[in-house]
Structures are given as structure tokens and as C-alpha cells.
Image (cartoon, rainbow over all chains, first blue to last red; front, side, top):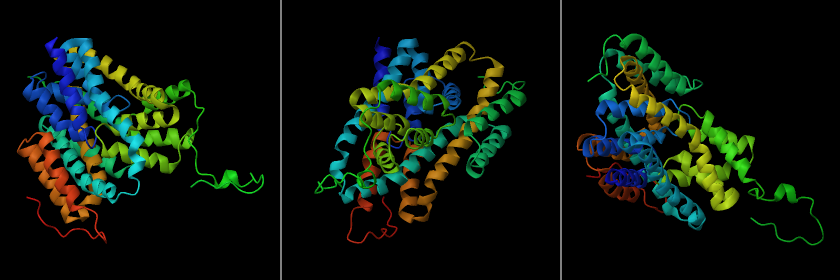
Length: 181
Length: 210
């Protein structure tokens, strides 16, 4: 019961803080889920983030799995609603009044000022996943290969590269006990 | 701009001069299926590109300008671009119900799949094969996130002010572990202030922002 409320509260807070999208709120998600509430281990968080990468739609749908880990299907539903509804309602309301600010020069200031902040938050999100996901030569090679594929070869669907990373891991790491505690 | 009532029944040039009108008679079912389709195929992040292909090009429910304006709102506000845009576009098409239906459509396929994977993962969290595959996926995710960050951030790297804002943000979040609330409340206003409206918007010289 209390855990359910915590799930709803944590993800509702993250929803409101998710300025700049999913990657930008990743460090805070990890801090709350792993460090404050101990719902998951570092590796568990990385794994679940990985699950979000291989399904279609926004990859932050992985919050559903985090909720499921805490209190089962109820937690899954609460995490989903908590993470998407508050921000959705804000956007819905804002889009209805947005045009009133059509001519305001502050709209441009807001965009220009927030753009680098969001990039910084995304970089921090990358760092927070890298801290657990990058461990040893093979993971570095996979990350570099996928980076190059996404950044330089624009025609490739990133999902295929992510799945490819999974297959490489499966083929080369399954004998080594990587990722086990 | 509205075309003023013309003298006489000259309705001919209307189609060309009239501004783009949001279609009013889109059925909820159609909205649901369209967003469900986008939600089911948009693998690999970057859902916005799939939305544009589906809504602007295929369905012609929005023109480019309305699409970009919805994107602008989504980016400036909390939440994911994909879901926020679905809500905004759904609202423009059919009001509140349109936005709820569009939101459910875009999230249902991926949400169901990730839950199935999550339940399977919970049962096999210590399986060495599952772990090995997810180590690979995690590493790949780092590669993808850094590529996307660089793609979006490339523009900013030409401006000293932007570089400072990026570095301060990364430092506060990744190294000082300051809560995102405080980062947004401190860096946000400073960054917007640095870009405050001026008579001729020249980029502020690279002053450090503490």
C-alpha cells in the first residue's frame, strides 16, 4: 500500500521533472529508484533500461517494469500513470494557451536557454547508464560500434543495432558470468 | 490569416489561399489505430520521426508548421516528446477524448511488450544468458544515447555560453549529484536569462555562469 503510493509519487515527480525528455531524467530516475528507494540494483536498472530499448515507442515505457518490480501489476500501472499523466496534462493545457504567447520574445529565449541545459541532462543520462553498462573491453567496443552506426550511418534503425549488441553479448559473454552479482 | 469575405460568390481561390485547417471529422477509432500503428513500429527511439511520417505525410492531419509547433511545446515542457505530441495532436483533432485515445495508442504496444519482457526478466534475472544479452543491450544503449545526445547537441558546441551551460549541468548532475529539481531551478533561469530578449540578439559573450 505504502509502496504503491511511493511508486506513484516517485514517477509523478519524475514526470514533472522530465524537461527535455526521457534521457534527461535518467540520472534522477536512477538516483530515486536505486539509491533512495533501493527498488533495484545498479545492474537491475541497467537491464530494465535495456528492455526499454528493444520495444517500440518511447523507451521510458520501461518505468512500467520498474513499477512491476516494486509491487507487481498494480505498481506497473501506477508507474505508467505516474510517469505519463502529469506531464501529459501539463502539455495538454499548455498547448491550448500556447498561441497566446505567439509573439513573445521570451519564447525564443526559453528555447535557446533550455536547449543546452537539455543537452547537458542528456549527457548526464548517458553517463549514468554508462557507469554500470560499460565494464570491460567488449562493452566499450559494442558502445563505440553502436555510436558509430547511429551517428554516421543514418539509414540504420538503431533498434537493430541495440539488438545486435544483445546478440554479441549473448554470444561472447554468456560463458563469463558477466552481469552476475 | 482569414480571407475576408469577398464580394460575390467567388469561392474559387479559396482552396489555395485558405490556411491549413485542422480536420474536424476524424473518427476516434481512426485516431486510435493510427497512433497504435506508430506505437507498434517505432523501434529504436526517435518516435517523433515516425509521428511526422504518420501524421503529416501519410494521414495529412497536420501540416509541417503545426507539427513543429506541437513539437516546440512538447520540448519546452516536461514529459516525453512522443507522448506529449500525441496528446497535443489528439486534442487538436478531437479534443480531450482525442488526446486520451492518441496517448493510449502510442503507449499500448510498447507498454505491453515491455511489461511482458519485464515479467519474463523478473523470472530469469539470474539466468546467465539473459544477463549476457542484457549486458550487450546496455552497452549498445550507451552508444545510442551518446550518438543521439551528440546529434542534438552538435549545434550547441559552437557557442561558448552553451558549452558552459552543458558542462555546468553535467557537473551538477553527474559529479556533484545535485537533485534535478535544483539543477532545473538554478541553471534554467540563468540560461534563459543569458538568452533574454535583446534589441539585436547577439550571442552573449562567454561569461561564466558560476
